[in-house]
Amino acid sequence: MSQTRSVYEFNSAIVREPSTSVVNGLRADGRDGPTYEGVKAEHEIYISALRNAGVAVTVLPPLEAFPDSIFVEDPALVFTDGAILLRPGTPSRVNETAEIAPILRERFETVLELPAPGQADGGDIMYTPKWVLIGLSARTDRIGAEALIRCIERLGGKAQVAETPKGILHFKTASSLLDDETVISTAALAGAAAFEGFRRIVVPNGEEPAANVLRVNDVVFASAHYPRTLEILDTEGYKVVPLKTVEIEKIDAGLSCMSLRWYGNNK
Image (tube, rainbow, N blue to C red; front, side, top):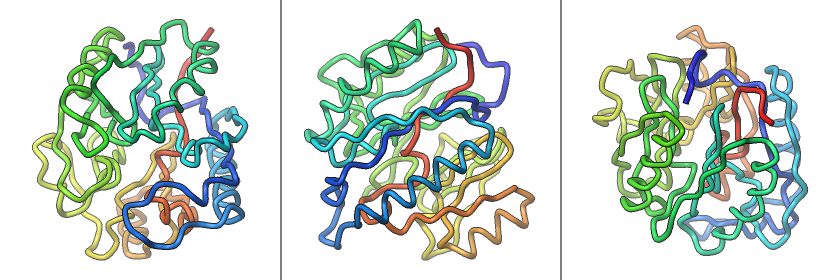
């Protein structure tokens, strides 16, 4: 996988409009779900932010049969030199891969498929300048992670497995890349061996969801609802774009999972 620019430099992205069934999206507890109008409004602002950051965005139509299909990062990975179709770790989401496969085959010469029986969600995958980190979780098992490493190697890249603290949905629920040398994370994940060699910024207690940020070119998308984290990012010199996440957080989601992003001229 050729790498001539930072892993957070993008000129292309794919998103999917939320369906009205998004109100039934997966969530870890019995809290109330979001409203369709609320999710749609947050999603539209997110698309505008991507475009303002210099990214050409392809918007796919909603899939009513798949409430969580707005979160296009989970069923696939994309790189400059190819894409990998994943096997989501939740039965209700497994067939989302088949829905997104045709659009990826239109855009990439090489599209690999994660083999059965392993499972992996894109929310557990973090791109870094050194390698791709694959967090183990309830949605990504070791068989899937090891198979994914082999797929990434076929595309010319390197990857390694990372541990995700118990009770955390996805690796990127609790950590994100801010720049080539820095990660932001919750206190529970700050000491992860996978982050050795990185500068680490820890989000304040009580603002754990703020660890899911998204670096896009020269800006950092961050949740607008965690003021202490926003202040830290500003003090550190990042150009922050605060975005509303109230509704998507009700279905255990963050900013990174709503798009597939890459840089390159595809077929």
